[in-house]
Length: 317
Image (tube, rainbow, N blue to C red; front, side):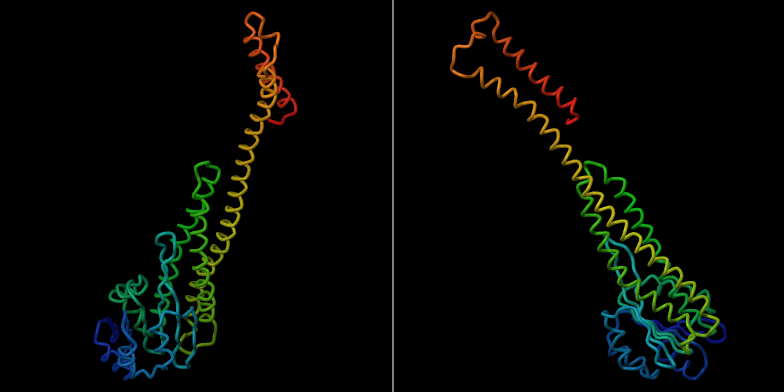
């Protein structure tokens, strides 16, 4: 699907892509062309009048790019990634952006919240495109980075829940949940780190399509993405500590069980000696006494109590 917007005379309206490109090249307005799930041939046919480099068109339709920014003089090629958290892992979606002096091109596979928000906002706020495409670029990046923050909140709450359950004897699945979170954050870190560097590059005085008055706004987006990166590093350390703590708790719990079993076995050793003695096929006087069995039971009870008393005195229990 291809959606194209044209802003001329202070009003924004949707128009065919070829009309938008023709008006933009004639200097009669600013335009935005959005590609959703289009193949390379369609993109080439539509964007041919803009003379975009073939490598850019090839990279746009592939989803193997890491975040980056390439400078082609009159236009920039950016690769960023949107994210949402689903089923204990992040769902990442690549968004390719080409920004020129009077036009903006986006390409993505499937619905993306930042692009959908831009379509909705542009109908009400034509100023996003009226003075050039960089305000719209800022809006896209701003919404995209904002969508990372709920993911950080979710991961933080999940880690807090794991920390509260680490001392629960029924928390057998703590390592499984922790590993899932760790893998999800590792996937995010592989994207957020290069994306942060990409946004930082946009804030410098390097690129012709980015006017100086837009750099402070882009720097604000960079600051929030840097906060996301710092939180990911912090959460990674917390999960590593949590896994170590879980192993320590399980080890201590196992030691306590072994300790109790050892006490029971130690108390039983003297009883085994006494019962073995009275179990021998010999004439033992106690058997001829009145109530001799009671004397034997008394000896067993006293032996067990003395053994346990010695263990308590030595603080071995």
